[in-house]
Amino acid sequence: MSPDLPASATHLVLIPSYNPGAQLVRETVRAARAHWAPVWVVVDGSTDGSAEALHRLAACDPQLRVLVLPENRGKGAAVLHGLDAAAAAGFSHVLTMDSDGQHPAALIPAFMAESQRRPQAMILGRPVFDAAAPRLRVRGRRISNAWTDLETLWAGIGDSLFGFRVYPVEPLRTLMHGQRWMRRFDFDTEAVVRLCWQGVAPVNLPAPVRYPRKDEGGVSHFAYGRDNLLLTWMHTRLMIGFLLRLPRLLVRRLRPGG
Image 1: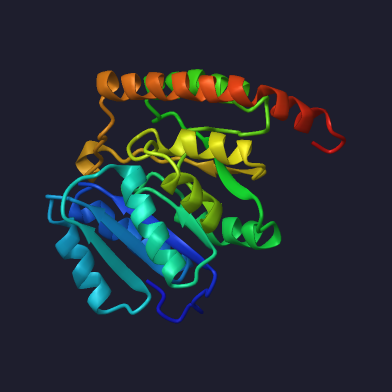
Image 2: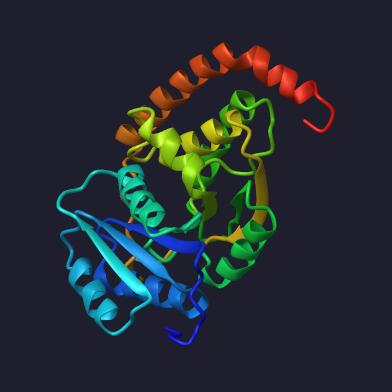
C-alpha cells in the first residue's frame, strides 16, 4: 500500500467482495491502494474470513474503508450500498473492480484520469484475455455483447460484462433506486445498457484480465445454470425496454453527433 498517495475528493475505488478468500482480497486491496486513495470495500456477507482480514488492513490505513453487509445480497446490491455511502461522503465517481485479483489495479490512475477528462461519461474496461482465460466464459460473453449492441443500437459498449469501470455516481444511484433489478450478477450488463439509454456515453479502454489459479486462491462464484437463466431474463426485459424506447433511440442515433 502507498499511504502517501494524495486522496481524491471526487473519485473513489469501490470493491464489492463476496468470499474471494482472505489471501486474494488482501492482495487486491493492497494493489488498489498502491495506485489510488481512497479505496472502499463492501463485504457482501462473506463467510471466508476476508472481512476480518480487511478490518486489520484498514486499522493501519485511513484511506481504506470496509463496509460489511450482514448477509449476501448480490454484487449489484453491494455496489449500490457503496454508491449511497460514496454520495453521502461527497464523491462524484466510483471505479468498480472485483476483489478476486482479475482486474488490473495498475490501470486505476489511467481510468480515473479519463473520467476526470470526461466526467459525464462512463469509462468501461474492454478485456484483453490471455491463454489462461476459460474458453467457455470468453465465448459466452460474446452472446451477451451481441444482445447489448442491439439493445443500445450499437452505442459503443465494448464489453457488457467486464466490471472494471468508472461510473458517475448520481446517474447510477438514481437508476438503481428507480427499479428492483440489477442487484446480482445482472448488474454489470444492465447498468451500462440503461445508462446508455439515459444518454451516458461509454468510453472504452483496454484492460488485461488475469484468472488466478486454484493454487493461488482463485475461485469463481458464477453458476452456469442459475446465472445464465438470470442473464436470459435480464436480456428479455432489456429487449422489452429497448422496443419501448426504440423511436427515441433512433432519433438520438440519427441526430448529427448522436
